[in-house]
Length: 319
Ligand SMILES: C[S@@+](CC[C@H](N)C(=O)[O-])C[C@H]1O[C@@H](n2cnc3c(N)ncnc32)[C@H](O)[C@@H]1O
Image (cartoon, rainbow, N blue to C red):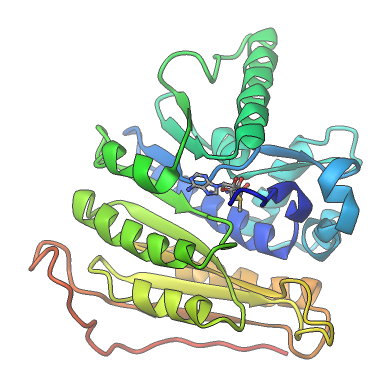
């Protein structure tokens, strides 16, 4: 089923959480000179117009990037994300919103590698065209081309399947963003199995999974299942902007689960998440949670499913 178009949701609160965290993970990988690989299993179109087309229908960006746009008190890590979006809008008017491939391309260096998968026939065309334009723009400014050569490879196909052949990456350093539409409940199963398989092929990789927080059982179970995958610890952060509305429509809460997170991420989230709740929160139900834990240490009994040892879990609520 391929009815999902990310354009309807571009720049909403879930995109803010996902793209802010993704930028933090890429920054961490970029601290060393050695090249790394970023793999986006579900890339979308890469770039979205906010004032036309799908995004203008429900204006979901009003729940996310819009309230952050003019803030002068952004925590530094969040300011970096907002500035990245602003650079895409040099007129100062909020017209375009970057998808995860664009965010990654902006943060990544010449030596790093982007591997992008997208299954939807229209989205893949737009994604390829967007990168072609970025390439032309960079060339016109005398910068290195992005799509030529080995730096960016865009593949039309199933990202869950395609990921397997890319792991481990030649540089043995990298991260994978897994961000499916979850329109079909099989996505929940495939996410868990994909991370489990990937962590065996490339145990030191950083894995980031975005997931919606919904009433359905699969949504509640996914982070719990991901916590049991062997690795060097995990972080689970969620952002809720308000309570479920009487009509039951809309997404109000989502999470990012990170396997093998950089040790610096938890402190950054402690600073940024209360701020996001205070600015994006719509009612008294607005909150965030932040949990961390240890899983089985890499290298010992790889591949054997084990229950994680009981470790202290940090849970924070505001409002
Ligand atoms: C939530 S959107 C991705 C948004 C993007 N990661 C971002 O943050 O800008 C999910 C995308 O996955 C695509 N898709 C669905 N199933 C897929 C699959 N099995 N493999 C690759 N792409 C898939 C959809 O067409 C959609 O464009």
